[in-house]
Image (tube, rainbow, N blue to C red; front, side):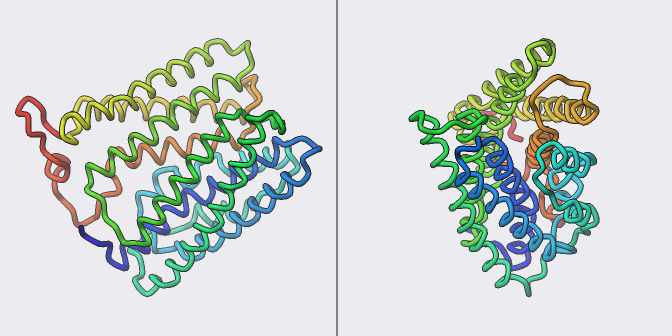
Length: 329
């Protein structure tokens, strides 16, 4: 099995952090804002994680300039055109502060190859992030268990807690693999990402449908259809495994089209929520949050993360089917 070079390790680690640290920070906010007054201890725990992950993101941004990929910075997974406005409106609505200056700094980051001299520093940073993310997972587990045994009330759905817990576990798994400098086979990696993010996109659609006002019938129907579509795509992983890990071209075309369409749906909803033109209980930052996750998935699928020196075609870089009637993506 091939290993990451020090430069690759630095860049891939910081790419991952720019996306996931903001996600973890916002998970902490979503938890904090949904507790009732009785659970002041849980509010304090969630608030601590919001502050901790904001500080970790600040440190990642300090390291990231000229050490992250152009793809990540241009994909819309770090910040969108509306992230700052979403933070400002969410702060106004919730009274919980956001570091808008940090978000502005992220918009000014420049891409570049990872500096191998940062390898040890990034490795130590990764270990800190793993520890804090595991602690956040513990909080999410406590909340979920309390909800399921009816000893705790929160305005979040139980599925949302499971959802954000799953994302945190996925982040830790990626970091542990990076710490070992493991490089996955490209086809194996895209199948793993597809399996995970298809389910995430389906659940996003379910959350949107249930957080919209009942009068928004057309939007609810659209969100429900996206949920059905992505659950079908998630099941397609079994078909891939039966074909010796080969990804049929039509499946990838369907996948990319579905992600592009839900990205556009989320982008439009994000703008309408900011303009107060949709009836819902979707706070602006949540709309921006799910849009960034769609942008992240689309960047993975459209292959913009391939190494700059790798000029092979998609069919050359991914495994070839053993069955003649199938060409691989």
